[in-house]
Length: 394
Ligand SMILES: [Mg+2]
Image 1: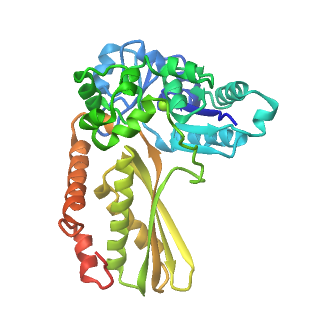
Image 2: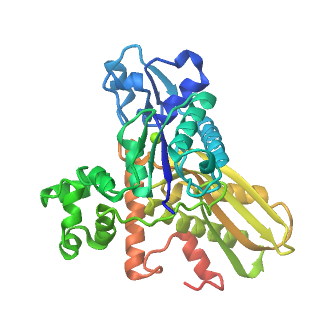
């Protein structure tokens, strides 16, 4: 059966949600800003006409457009709209993969929705429903693979549905003339590197010998070449039911009431989960801690940061505070879990003054040292605490 996959991506999401929530902002140049660092996090299409883009200092945006409306970020509100969009997606197919607050895949293959309508009609209805019910617009790509769907959804914004017919020749006609930056995993640095080697179009990458590409791209070469050759069998993965999240848990060798040890273990779990967040190029805003008592009773608690991050040190204080709040029985603990959720994919570039970037670089450097020389080559205080305690296998 030919697969039919939709990738959708909300347009100017934060600014659009603000306009949806407040009628007086509609049709006006609006930016969501006022982050700690004063950067435009999202600009409405009306604001973009003045040359305002993300990320740009709010002060500069105001100079470009004197009657600009600047509203502060309200992540709770965006996450609520996100849940509503995914609620509409769930009504179409059970196979929905969330990629972040404002984008995801829907696999329509063999669904009941497609018995009554063609996939393009299903996609069109989804887009209209989101617009009618939530007053925000999404752009969609409908294609046979995730790769083509994702590219198509971002190519013509806003409020667009781009369909790539499931026909090899047509797919290549679409894919091959595009600049290489449209391939997943090709960021600005890799793009420059490829350009300097004479590779500007995806079609050129498809024809390169693998060994040659490997010298340029390292271990990513074969995946990149597969994509360039339109080879993509990745399934839409709906196994993470409520949301995209990063969870890690640990059962103690022996149940414990040593709060320092439990806190240290939770921090280490946060390290591991955040390593995966970074590897995916994402940021998270919400931390959940779950504890299981020796009698199997469970408690959990949750807190959110004021803005998304991919740096573990920023979540340690939350982890400790949640633990102290939820551990209210004088009973030993057998298992602990940390879950990182409310995933964003657009925050790393918003850091004009490089504060977050430096913390990010430090975290990556620590990870590199450990990968190369072993987990004990570089330890945080909580790793040290766990090492003193028994049962640490590191
Ligand atoms: Mg978007």
